[in-house]
Image (tube, rainbow, N blue to C red; front, side, top):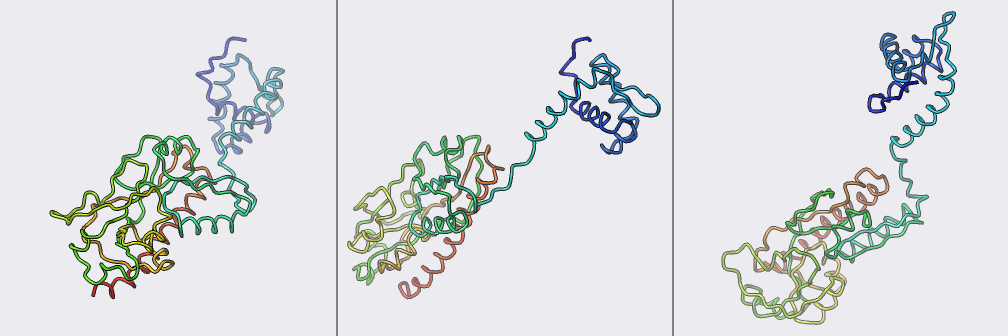
Length: 318
């Protein structure tokens, strides 16, 4: 037998060979594969030429295999089954029976975190959630599949190997404690007079408050710089600090701590809001499931926060 030129072998030739061995005739193999008899005959001729063996010969109206064909089919069948298994679509994700660990990188906590946890455990009681901050290495972690989905604010261009979806942009509002002296004379002077709190997130995106869209914005003095959003509510409720943050972060703290919303005295620069994930896991059923849960929760809470804050703003700005 001459050496087989593997680069010239068409996988379809092996598929045709298996069908012929099973059906025993060109016509039946053609019907099984949805091809014409001439196409089956041509494929058999090509495979005969490649392996240097007649493989199947018509005897008494039926194709009879050669000894080599009987040996070859025993090797071909498991190969074809393996290829089918490798190329098969992933099994559907079943949350109710999953014990997977999901990792989400997102600086938004509070209501967002509690809602995601509750929704996840209602659907997947044995699953576990790890809610991470957004460190500088988050892009590498997501690309490598160590993080399922991550939040991204600002104009940062994502590296290759990541996919993204844009979600409703932040709506910025200033928040102060009930009884704050700025409530009686809110305006540019009060904005500049009282100190502000700022949260420093470890990423490359500058705060849109640092580069406002106004031509001549009033000054802003940073009186406190903290590393996380979770302590904003009690801090604002017990000080004269002003906090200007996205509503989706603060709407429920506003209710819990009795904070008052105010219209910011500057116009924040445009600030895109996105979620991103690894391109390698784009079609992974479990990864798609947690992405849809997290992103869907964010969009719902963004809209709800907008309604909660808007209800309070008219009486404060009339």
